[in-house]
Length: 254
Image 1 (tube, rainbow, N blue to C red):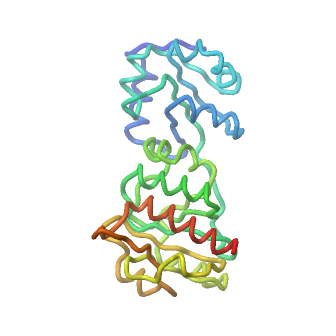
Image 2: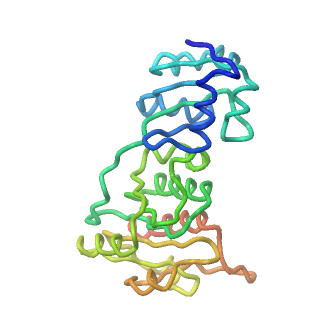
């Protein structure tokens, strides 16, 4: 284990890599996420620990599996960590290389202009937990491997295929070639609880408030929605994604 100081070149480089993510790598913040890497057999390229975290008995497995380990003072880690409540652990792993969703089986989400990394991460987490095959990101979406998105996903961006820069035309063409359908989401759509799921299926969601643009709506085979009460006009897009996936999972089971 190497000890590095506040003014070392490595700390300066780490700060730069967190502010502007280096393509091909993912930086995770937190003890739980780092422990999950070991559980998921994800190789840790670099591990950064404070003395307190390094002394924790649970850190032994992290240290044993990491390719390189560095110790730095708590205030130094706090100054570079991407979150306000760092837990004394930063881990660097390789960005996963997933195959493209074929469009021939399962359910995939396509997102339009979801720019908040926390929301995007929460959608990926819901997709992983509720059986989605992939999450496809249209142009203008947040970086799914940015630290806040990774933390929002609870590491699910390393467990579920995520594709970037997929236009709506490409996404819809892919599922149609697989003899499936593309469904748009809109408050005026059919009540999702009354619609039977079929596969392959592409479910398209837009950012909260703005929703999907006219082109995505025009390409859809069907429009579905979540009925709301008390004058509420929209839901957070991550909440909506979770409800839609849950309802579609139930319809498949039925």
